[in-house]
Amino acid sequence: MMKLIHLSALLLCAHALKAQSPAFSQFYALPAAMNPAYVSTVNGIEAQAGYRRQWKGIQSGFDTKFANASIRFCKAPIAFGTYLSEISESFFGYREQEAGLQVGGFLGNPERFTLHGALQGGVGQRGVDFTRLLFAGQIDPVFGVQGQPSAYFLNDGSRLQTFEVGFGMVGRGLLKWNNTELPASLGASVLHANRQEVSFLPLSYKQALRWTIHGSITTPVVGGLKKTDLFYINWIARLEGESALKRATTGCILQYSPINIGLFYQWNKSPFATRNTHGMTLSIGYDFDLSDRLSFSVQYAFDGTVGGLEQGATNGAHELILTCRLPETCIFSTNDRGRTDCFDYRKSKRKDKYRRFLN
Image 1 (tube, rainbow, N blue to C red):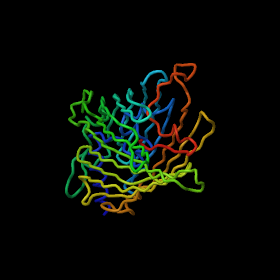
Image 2: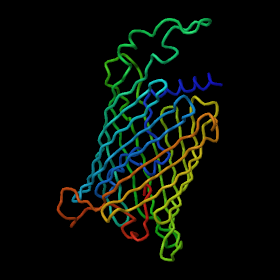
Image 3: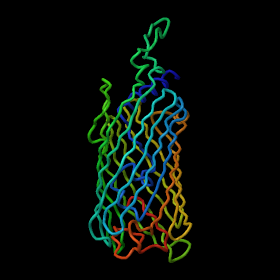
């Protein structure tokens, strides 16, 4: 069984050299990692950081880190941001790092609907410590590994320099049903669209194109502890593919005042698992304001496998996302008069503590 687990981890690591993008179960709380178009949906300044600890039971597991900051102009429908990401696995020394910029804008009627678009460009490097891999030396059927890895892998470290180009679009607005206004969104993105590497090393690994389609709709429910408050149900879905990996996620987030609880089901198709590694995600979040100009959000989630790799073997995945917002900050202007805003359902629902998820 341990040999099978080691082999699975080895295959996953080898596949990762094709450049797996950072993927979070709480994609709705860290949208910039999924679709660069969300860079222009912020108000003022917004900074986020996410950490994911995945499959600790297999070797030492995978760590995913992502951080981004977005700034939107006050007097023009333009925004820009920067991001950093890292995926690492310490057992085989695999590491993938990337940093880049996002530039976007929007158009439309901020009261009803706005369409957002953005481009993304980044540079990075990825590699694995081939001295730790079994096939780095000569394999003898009786005596095991014989000899040393080639001098080529020992000298160059097997790092590939990469250049990334991506783009995305998302529409956000209001739908009407039975005289009820429902905030909704629909978007799509493509990352690693160029599939290029800028290394001088004669290695043929290519970055895998990643595409994502996502949508959301929120149902306000009158009631709660006070009759004037609103209870929200956020319905969210995502479909994405990256090389041979496919993933579909659907579920909902129950939101009341500053607290939200989410439950999602994931359909994961992996080329290395005998069965698809489906999973369930349970998340909880809390929003709090330090002042009228500064607010924070904390989101935690746990993924449990329900098919393919056993829960006892993987130990699931833990995820933490932190968000800091300065919504009233006006960039490159002394006041917010004549401010250019995009669609924001919160504008008319501030007392309800509504927090948007994708929409």
